[in-house]
Every structure is written in C-alpha cells, then in structure tokens.
Image 1 (tube, one colour):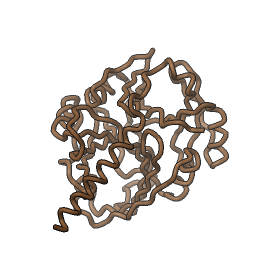
Image 2: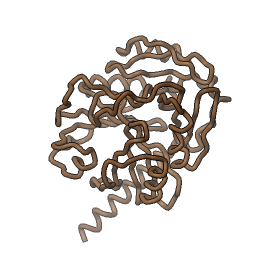
Image 3: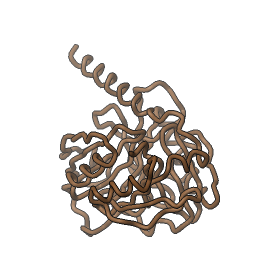
Image 4: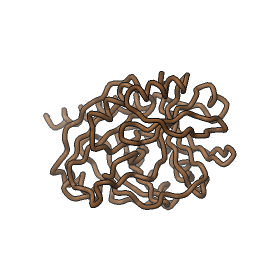
Length: 296
C-alpha cells in the first residue's frame, strides 16, 4: 500500500533559502514549483512551503518528528558544505562504534539535523538521506503503528546509557535511551525513547518539521488503513497543486499521503531509491574487518 517515504515537509518564510544547504550537500539543484521548493537526493526528498519559521528551537529529546539524517562519505567536505550555508554543528563529529561518525547540527531557522559520515565507503563528494527520526514516550505503540502501516519489520536496538560520546553528540548529560528502526523502504525510520535526561517541560514537542509524506497508489485507502491502526483525522495538504489526505499518528505527528500518479510529473524521480541497501552492507563488512583485526 505504501510504496516509499516520499518527502519530509517544512515551512519557511524563504523556502528556497531554507533548502540551499540540502542542495549543496546532495550536489543537486533546487526545484521551484509555485510557492514550493524541493530538493532531492538519490534516495529521498525534502519540500519547503511558504509559511512561518519554527517558533522556537526545540530540545533534541522533545517528543515528535525530531530530525532528518543526512549522510556523506567525506566528513570534511560535508561539514564545509553545511557551514557555508549557515548550519552550526552542536559538537565535533564523533564515532560511536558503528562505523559512522555522528554530529547534530542546527540550520539557520533552528531545525535539528543529524550528519553521519561513512568513511568505509568509496570517495563520493555528494551526500544522501539516511533516516527520519521520531522521539516518543510510547515506543511500542508508535513502532507497531508504523510497522503495520508500512508493511515493514521493526528492529529493536540495545538500550544506550552511560556513554560519554553519545552525551557529547546530543549535547545532553546522562543520556539513557532505547532505539527502534524500521527499514525496508527508501529511507529508514528511527524511533527514540529517552528515559533521561528529563525535559524541563514534559509537554514540549518538536516544531522544526511539519509532516512526513508517504507515497501510495491509493492515498484515500492508505489514510483509511492508518485510521484503523489508531491514527486520527487531519486537514489535507496541498502538494504540487494536488489535495493530499492527511492523518496524525498515535503521537500526534502529521502524515500526508501522496499519490504515485500525481507526483510522476511533479518532481524528479529518485535516482537510487535503494541506496541504503548498499550503505548498510558496506558498513557491516567494515565492522567485521575491524573485529578480525582486533583478533589478530
């Protein structure tokens, strides 16, 4: 029913400027459609529509659609491209024992971005999308919903605590979290349940990204299925002059369903929708080689 993660949506008083750093990071151009701006990587898209900038800078661990992750092979080139467009890294990129180097950053309007660098890949100056991340207080409920809606398996990660590098990346003290990933489409969905530190305001929500768009052959049927799974109704979204049905997931995050047929002539097709399927095996081989080296 759901064929891809079509795009992530945001609002900005300057849609074109809001996406400039993505265009340079991915080595592509911004597409302008009416009052919309679009940028595509090989495996994903982001859309900026005209509207207000985020009213505040949300905490890293506030509930909601928290960040997008962009990945690249060359750490120095990736960082230069981001900083040239006003992006500020929260800390130096650090390894966390997975093969990647991690850093969080803020764009010019305060949205949270995760940059992951993949030194185990062959040199490539251009980046791509890695995942879209949610923070939730009810990890089982939200991951059951998305696994069923997408028809994909959820993968439980090990609980992370007492890790100084994780604290440094997140710029938080005493991080204690539990992760789940849902893979199988062009982008991975990542879910975090933070047990610590506690938010100053327990009701704080993310506000940087406005929705996640899912591509479906029949959006109205996808919406009905989402409602059966526990979503609630939401106002439609106009995308490329098409009225697209929308819901809110069990946590209140907005989902928009985009017709496959409607977008065929709207934005560029993805050049390598399965790019992540190449990245993850390369990482696994790299980590296996490191483990063999330790055994010698």
